[in-house]
Image (tube, rainbow, N blue to C red):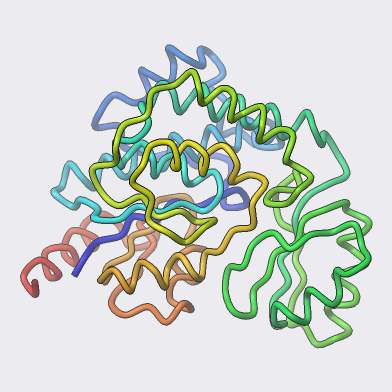
Length: 302
């Protein structure tokens, strides 16, 4: 039975999310070397209006909290991240150096925001199946972006087009259609060009073979080859996320304790919906002591 660390994507961020964040490995000093004074206001409300800041904040938070767990002898057998969450997952797996991750994530955010500075984003539709949502988006300038759960589908595209799709979804019986706190149309073909530019930057970075299983949130497969992980990291912004399938894959690999890194607890809810067997907790809500207790209990049962 194994431990899975999960790392959230955009939409979970909030102002002040660094408050109380541990830094057992001196990550913030490294971040200051790379980002300078930008670090001081990275989790402020004005900064988090921008994709670059959001993605950097999620990277730093994910890595710092995972470091703190590992300092308490809670170590992952599998790591998986949703969208930008793949980057802290790669750092914790030993694939990507934290310094390189900071530079790549800053570039990723800039490329995405420059491509679509305004008028685009993502909307979650709850209560409809994939087939129903596919029928609604057909002929619109929107795309299926995230398959988070059987009846939680996220679309991406222009704001006005997403609003029309949301109206149709609610009329068809959707329980909710929520515009997410994401200002770019992630996980669709609209980001093919920025993804290709990021892939070129990856060719200048050295990646290492992971020391634990790196489970892709887009392909729902465990990747061990550095070339495939680099491709996954660079292009996941333009690929549909298959989170439900990824968590099913983690369960099939004997994942029995899923711990979601801050901020938020969205992935914990989605993991439980993926027919999870065992425990799934949000570290932000449950705390390190609970995570450590559950990890010890899991180890005793093995």
